[in-house]
Image 1 (cartoon, helix red, strand yellow):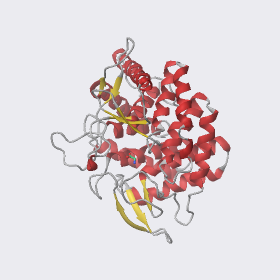
Image 2: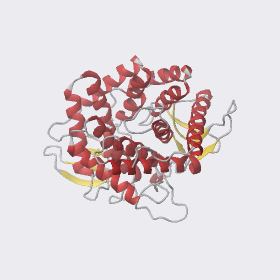
Image 3: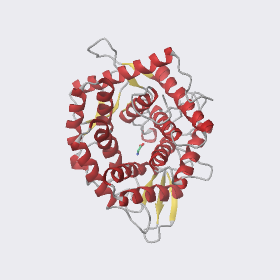
Image 4: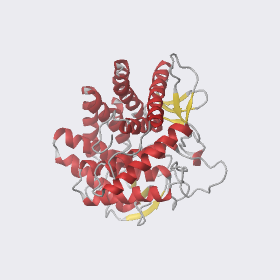
Length: 390
Ligand code: GLY
């Protein structure tokens, strides 16, 4: 078996055109009078609902701008990213573990791609601040009192989405050589795995624990269909985080085992077209929402994990699955929106599903869905480096 997945000219064109259209969408967004950070958008008008302080999603907007600038060579997109990154500064110490999302995707990515000093400084400050919330007797960083979830937050709660904090800490460990960041990143990931990763490799989103002993009290969900169901993004965030940590720490077999288990479960349970329903256990009937954002995150994870797997056949399988799914997203789930200024029509990733239990943004463009699709396209087209793709 050779190392290259099949990749015809039509497919290359589809991927390239989607990148160009998504970059055009970023340009169009920059022209809108944004009241805050883009969060989700109507996929017919392209109009964004924004958040004033960045919520947990605001870092993906500069993330999209860093990627778009990198792909297009348009330095004005990086300048815009710098400006948006500055607006994240007040969030460095906010009492939400989800600031990992803000500062990894908004800042660490910008420091790496564009050499932004501002982004680097903020990502390191957030890593220090997050590290200080680590509770050694429990082995994790709790959600915090201001975690952006509608219920059950605070010092005795955790969820798998919080693994974004491990990304910014692991990144900071590489940057500074400070092993404390690495140790906390790994322990946080492993404790959450004990709480949330089920025996079969499926993931439960959330857990309460005893604040003295660290013993698990109950598992539940913040956003899924039911306490025992597998919410699509719970599975996807776990895949992303264990895959990312596996790539950084290939010698850590425990992390790698979790990465392989959660990725394997996704591959075996996702619908045939590769695009997940919003929750794997939600009744599947006509109109059950899909979640293209969970799907894009999962593809990023499969592409990342494939670079470190020992078994080349499995690595090929993961790459092939991610490639086919990204192609499906580009072909069937990406749509044009009005308002482009040039010859390239702006494109959006449709059918992201934010929070159906509360009826919010069920079939929308989601800023993190855009980010992960753009990232996957960068990996698949060689615009971003990987070890075994290309
Ligand atoms: N809390 C992160 C998410 O909704 O995916």
